[in-house]
Length: 137
Image (tube, rainbow, N blue to C red; front, side):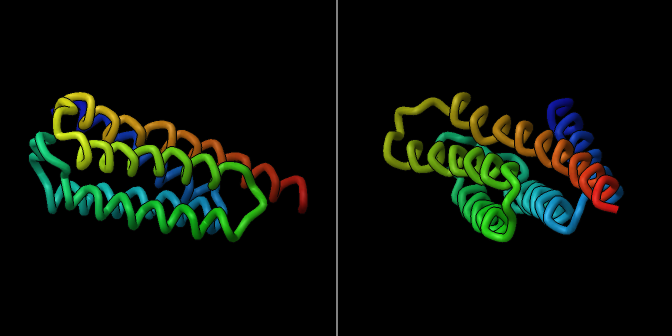
């Protein structure tokens, strides 16, 4: 349970920083992560990870589309990174679907821990967005 609490603490920090210092795209990315996390917790509160987690896969696909749309609207590098990391999560689901012998623990770890670099990059981008607007003003 501590891992869930730590994750949500990092997620809420990300949303707070993006809301306070980020631009519209950083906020969009942070809200996407927040909505996806809440939906995941609500729809699949106790995933077993023994088979493909279909609800989580579908939510992850929607997140990928959201991040991809953000990447298409900017020249910044960070949306491409978060989209790429989200794509890695998608491939984890696809591999579990194709190869049932993949153990539950590695599947769950990939699905869960890929979120941290995404959230940290949104925090970084939010701080950079604030600095860019200070310089431009």
